[in-house]
Length: 155
Image (cartoon, rainbow, N blue to C red):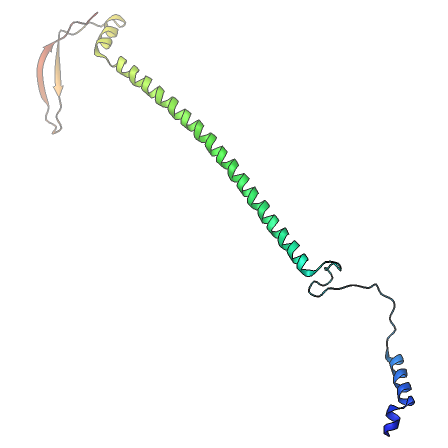
């Protein structure tokens, strides 16, 4: 082969025929504008930095909404606990007043003059002429105390 043949019209014609035969025939396909770094999800008129900023804003917004929901639920639980505390406090105070009334009633009921009066008036019991008091010390030895005369009931 000579040099002239490589640069001549025949070489160019052979190259173009080879290109035409080897080139596949494409049908018209829809055009996709692709922006580097985002693939098919990219918007043709929006820069990738703007899309990243929008995505970041979405994440921050979701985080803020989640924090607000947590704060609202904590406020609800706090209110419920405060209401329960108030009810328990009122129940305790009412029980304490009932306990004071019961202590007073017990003191009245344990009064010896009241017991003697009830036993003689309601049950027809007669006061004893004398009584014997038995004292039991902690060491277990039983001793008998002096006999005393019964007191007259006060009316």
